[in-house]
Image 1 (cartoon, rainbow, N blue to C red):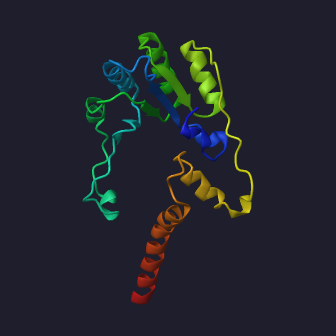
Image 2: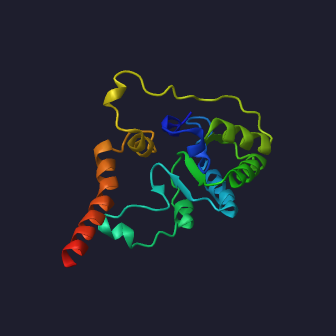
Amino acid sequence: MTNTLHRYGSAESFEDDYIVFATPSSGRNDVGCIPKLKRFLELALPFKPVNLGDPPHGGALRPCKNLSTAANWKRDITPDFRAVIDGISEPASVVAIFDNQSAAEQFLKLAKEADLGLSINISGSIEGARQCCNFAGITRHSVGYSLGFEGKTEKLPNTQLLALTTMCGHGMISATFARKMIDRPRSASLASLRNCSAAD
């Protein structure tokens, strides 16, 4: 089970999202595992992942202190996967993310054949994960279900905001911040329309 389990949305909303983790076991196989973690990520490259990463360093697109919100619209967003792989320096989970099932299936099969001795976990829709395992010749041993939200659900943000904020299963994206980011382009568009109307 991973933090991605707690994402909000329909199964269809995860059709283009396959997250494959490799994790060493602390005290069992973490000593000397860094080359294996790097190899896992290298195996993903031919299948064109949309992102690679690890918790200590993040993904291929990383924040910079000198970037403002506006700078993100202009910056080069070409992922530097080699920097991610070369930057693996400590035992931790690594992740390869794919936007199509075929790539995830083929990568999972190759990872199984490589037999790196790491725990492999795939996160996505239950049916999509099952199909990936079947393709790779893996018998799935467990499934984690999120039971959803309980309690005063009327206090939750709307479903659009939940779908966005729960993309981080750790709950680190504020609904207020997400609402602000959604409303910002809308506000800019309205201001632009007002300026055009005033010019006429």
